[in-house]
Image 1 (cartoon, rainbow, N blue to C red):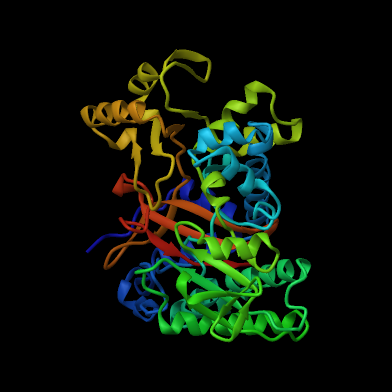
Image 2 (image 1 turned 90 degrees about the vertical axis):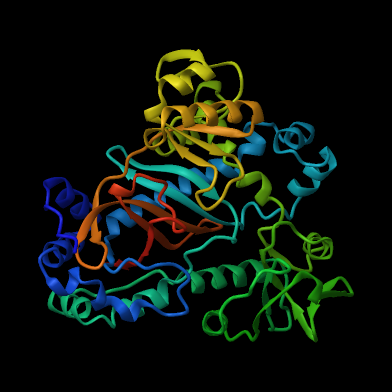
Length: 459
């Protein structure tokens, strides 16, 4: 049995910054056996939830949400401009850097419509002593964390949680991420001149061989699309999941059976030709399409960080980079600076191991991420050499999370590191995906390892 952690002033300050209610919840929960016992939260185990859930909710205040929204908008605004600001929209240079097949492919990806302005993004941020810092941006809908509405509903069925909320007089709200996404899809589709007949059908396109969502989650998606269509003025339409080959082209439009498809959410590794052709012909809205391969590349953060000294960005853009992007560099042979200290890249990586994190540019789910402070020196040296040889990695300063208290194990609570994952639909804030992991784990905060998914109550 794990004993509750000592309650420190640092923990108090972290939770107070989230909201007064978040602090009050921890002060009540840390000494209450019902909140410390994991058995209290067994109703959270439902098939609709893909990941292990954190038992305690997070009470997100308006000020903290505004900070997070500003960070997300600031980073994504400059990220979208990387092709222009860094490469001058030079198709040959873009193709070479991102390893595209040809300059013509780069031109095709960047030509309107291209999915940049209306794209789906979710960044990973750490709230540090210096504020929010962006670790990476997933510019793609192929990401987790869409379950805000059912998560909040499930937590409110936990007796002690519901009792605390009622006794404290808290009006719990939340950003319904899926509903907001469907509303965004509807707006963009109508703006593109689609669904003129009042019918707007949406599909998620899955990779062949990949399992589609659970029946309960697909039913939830259908309900949310129906609600979003009703809110948009009484449009009709349906949601479905399919594989690329199930979509056929008729008169330039895509059809699934007899239904015309107006918007497609891609959960595939690359766009199929007939789907992309329909998008480029303005017969379909596509989220996000192959522009993902450019904007999701982790090396973009190095281009942003290095751009502070190169003058490629406007004063406002540099301020966003300076405020939200930690020191990041491409791992390539040559010399590099680290807060005024200049040396060969290999020497920098080896000398400052405990201050640095190495990341492969196209890795996902915490794979390809090595934290120097948690890695033996010999293993770190191996990773450094392989990263330099490949030339497709970045090095980033290690950003430490403020500590947050959450339930842990069969019984107890421990300080956690936390990753804040705000969704952005175009320029619209779309809710929050939280991941937390006990600090004692000393590893990447990832749901495939020791982390759990949190639930934000907006207060």
